[in-house]
Length: 484
Image (cartoon, rainbow, N blue to C red):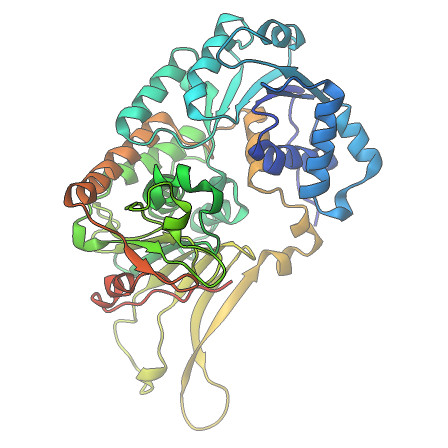
């Protein structure tokens, strides 16, 4: 099977924060992989921009080190790495001052795509946008990529959108959420809208409930200062999990078009009901045998920040009226796994006597690890002795189905950066989406802050706080077991 690659135009990609951790771990290795896939036109360039006073050769050595560390050894071809490094340039620049901007302007070329990746703290977005505009470095066809967090509440999100809007149109702004670049997330739209099999069943008449899980085994480690200002709600639910919920619950767009898709996602966010206190469970992991608890990593020994949160959410529209969406995410849990599980209702009439053998049909979309999908269905248990039922999976693992081609699948950052160069905003968040998500999130956070709620302590390596189990049990349901 040969995959189709949509060509991209010649580009100059400037990475502000080019010496930072995100650039080293994700952006640079991803671009190298796209280079290996012949998806980087001959004259394209990658320009690192950072405060450090590096020579171009010194920055290239940092790029080489990043490839060595974060690209599989079998893809580290010496000749290819040298050819990739020939595309690399560097400029020392002061994001809040004047140094380096004239040099960067002189480096930019006419008649190529100009893209600027803001791999820096959001506090610098306005300064960089202002200087790109003042120095005439960005033109009407330029694109900027901004990383989350997109504010920490509605007011700051509006302010950030306002700062960017002074210098760039909405069509030029690419708010990146790497979850939307995952192959399985996009396949979710293909499963729904390219097959007649599921879409007629994708509504309250047939769906019992939906579970969205993002579980991590790691703790906050050295990110305690950052995490104390965010917590699981701001760090994961307001953006990543909100986007997954939207793709599950959205109506079919009129076309696979950036604004058509994002219009339907926005309708879902605006249809979310407020969440009451009894439908929220917050947790904070305790110390384990080998690693300290959350409080040991926090700068505040009395921190009330949650490392775990579970929510019961309802979408107030005709399609989903009465169908609960259960969301949970946390750190230091039993296994690392991200999945969406759509559980369908039982048949209206049971014709078999083996009621104990019956289980719901469940469509499971696995985002990580081992991306793929499976559909849990009922069959007859083999052997004599009557009609005994058993549940089996119809499994589609990408690695098993696609074979070697699965290894060629771009990771999320690779795909999204190439979409920026192509000018395709379908998998990027629009400004009104971000603001609507905060408008729903803020009252939830304000509620527990007003009540001075403390998160419940849970054991590391567990599935989370006990009350999260009760969130499901009182509805006669159970969380799916977290597995790698």
